[in-house]
Image (tube, rainbow, N blue to C red; front, side, top):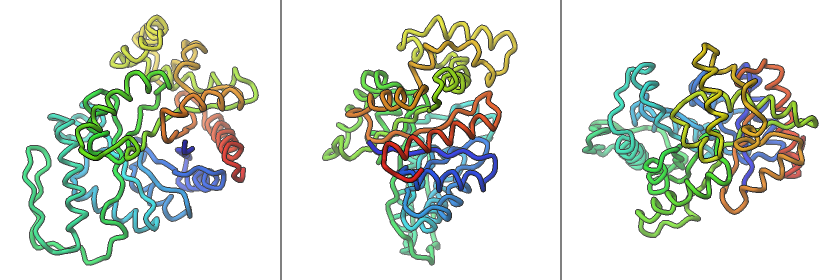
Length: 344
């Protein structure tokens, strides 16, 4: 498995310093999310501040930019990084699209399919000057009189798709170069719920095999010599997601329905979603995160061998002061170095 990392920083300077440290430690990809920052600007900053690690978005929102803008941004970051960019796209949820970004939701699976097709079509033709004409229900493209006057590093940049549900997972396997999991994805859930859909999606593309798809597991990671400290740092993230009823099946799969019900009730009583860690038992944390001593985390990480191709480690942030997230980050980077033989 490839070990990769999602750096954290209160400032862009701290973010880039963390990315450089992770790269030295042996992380093969450094990933940036989209929520409190845009995905593309930090990706550009990391492209300039790193040398060998790939730069990925995990994820950029697919529908809040036009396919042409997304394609142009990807070409620019790929140029800045010398061909190291991975465009990770996700749909987000309906409320985020409609209420936060004033973007129609529609049919997300069909729309993402057309969006990816339009981006790739644009990359393949943008320097030729020929018309770019695509029909479509969701992402048509009508471009005449346009030619990008700059050379492109690659006319096909890898596109990874984030997916949770079965239909989107099948789409990721069918048309994506990679699949990116939710932040909570245990080895058992990957094996029993995700891989069958991946197999079904791959079967839709003749000639495409399992080796042609990079399966990226996102894992909240918390490492400390004191396992209690490690687990309490990760509990806030588990509580955040457990407060959402749409994850009922996920927690039930892990025999955590009763524990989730306590979290939901606490949330309904008026507690903020970022501050539910104290009602999350260690059993919940152990089931869905990589938290514990260095030895415990390495053992849990090893459970993904043979199932995932890549693991993306990220530090916990929900309900934590910056100092705790910073300490968690340093411990993860140290662990990466120990696993890969890199420089701590």
